[in-house]
Image (cartoon, rainbow, N blue to C red):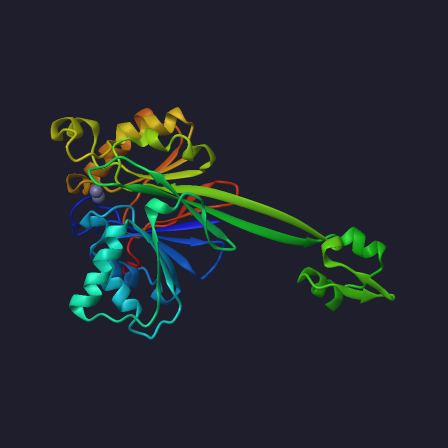
Amino acid sequence: MLQFTFLGTSSGVPTLTRNVSGLAIHYCKSKDWILVDAGEGTQHRIQQAKLSLQHLKAICITHVHGDHCYGLMGLLASAGMNARKDPITLIAPKEIQQWFAVTCQFTELFLPYPIHFIDVNTLTNPFQLDEHISIDVHHLHHRVTSYAYGFKATQTQRKLNVDVLNQLKIPKGKLWGDLQQGQNIEWNGQSVLSQDVLIQNTQSVYAIVGGDNDQPELLSNACQDAALLIHETTYTQSILDKVGAGPMHSSAKMVAEFAESIQLPNLIATHLSARYHDAQGVQSIGNEIAQYYHGNFYIADDFDQYELNMHGELTQFRTGKPWEK
Ligand SMILES: [Zn+2]
Ligand SMILES: [Zn+2]
């Protein structure tokens, strides 16, 4: 299962209602979580969303534009304030590593924990962050090199095969518990192997989180296995036509047409230009997506939370600002 908490959904600049890019991903009921992008102010959003920097396991930066990374240094510094020892994996363009090195040098920043840096450009195979989640990378098209990250969550459920246990006449209780935990036991002078009495069911679900990109079709292959795509819809098509191709962003129409063409089951639109931050603006993005895409979609607000279950079903389970509850 994957859970997504939107910490920033604005393009370019923050407004009073939407901060610049940041997305927290929880997986498989683990306390650990992953941050995708860290626009300025992301650490405040992390506090407001009641997330713990202690459990931040990895950060993935999609590209070097400020609205996606200017919050990174402050966040890394704050994570070191309470004597953190566990490493943070940082997957990012190599320029981010250089920026981090000079920030440490010029501002006398000494982190008490290691950063495990991975140059995103060298990540050709899926990176197994832990037993539950792996991360892979897809190239996008933008003014600077930009990437999408794929997250594959895998969960294994172990159920006791009660028929076999009854045949062996093993009594309920501690012995069943030991077998369920993967321990072998002795019964009636014989060894009973846990693997012989367990039914293992492994399920996985895959979602893609894009960086800035004006060619959604670059994700065609990657999306074949995806139950969810989170993608920028910076403008409606009519405004994109006026602005021109220079900023190299996608319109709601472009993303919706792409999603429809590959029969994507779930889409979350984010990274809205400030001109769409009122209800009417959001509505215009929503109308345009609905016109071209017939799957399940949402337009993310800051602090919205979504869950993608192991069957690939997406639901929104919390909306609005946590301090207003
Ligand atoms: Zn951006
Ligand atoms: Zn950008």
